[in-house]
Amino acid sequence: MVTIKRCYFAQIKLLKMKKIILAISFVVFGSMAFAQSDFSSEIDFYQSAYGLEKKAIVENFMQLEGDASTSFWTIYGEYELARKEIGKTRISNLNQYIETYENISDEQAEDITSKMLRNRAAQEKLYKKYFGKLKKSIGAKNALKFLELEVYLQTAISFALLESIPFIDE
Image 1 (tube, rainbow, N blue to C red):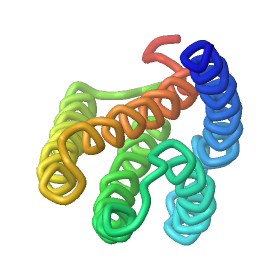
Image 2 (cartoon, rainbow, N blue to C red):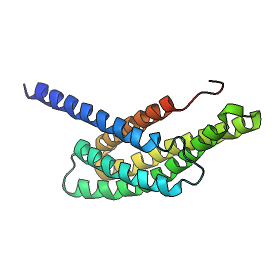
Image 3 (cartoon, rainbow, N blue to C red):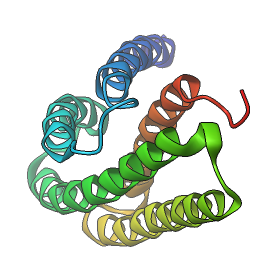
Image 4 (spheres, one colour):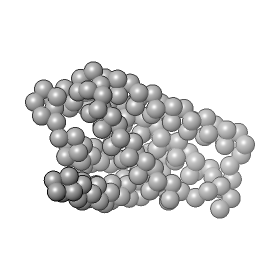
C-alpha cells in the first residue's frame, strides 16, 4: 500500500512539474522567440525567474538533507551559472535562425547548424562534468536523479520552443 501511495504522489508531483515547466517554457521562450537583437537583459530576467521556479522543483524532487543537501546546492549553483551561459548562446543562435530562416543562404544555414551542434555538445559536456562532481559529493544514484530531472526539464523546454519556431520554407 505504501508503494502505491508513493507512486500516486510521485505521479501527482510529476504532473504538477509538467504544468510548471510548460508555463515557464511559454513565459520564457514565448516572448523571446521573436525578440530583437538587443535582448541580453531580457534573457537575464527570464533566466533568473526560471531559475527560481526551477530551484523549487529541484528541491522538491531531490529531497536531500544535511551535508548532502549543502554539497548539492553548492554544486548546483555552479552548474546553473554554466547552464545559463549555454542557454544564452542557444537563444542567440535561435534568434539568428529566426532572423534568417525565410531567406536563409547555404552559408547562414551552415553557420547556424555549426553553432547549434557546438551548443548541444557544450550541454552534454556540462551534464557529464556535473554528474561527476555530484557523484563524488552525493553518490551516483542522487547524481543520476538530478540529471534525469535536468534532462527532462531541458527537453520539455526544447519541445515547447521548437513548437513555436517555423521550419525553413514553411
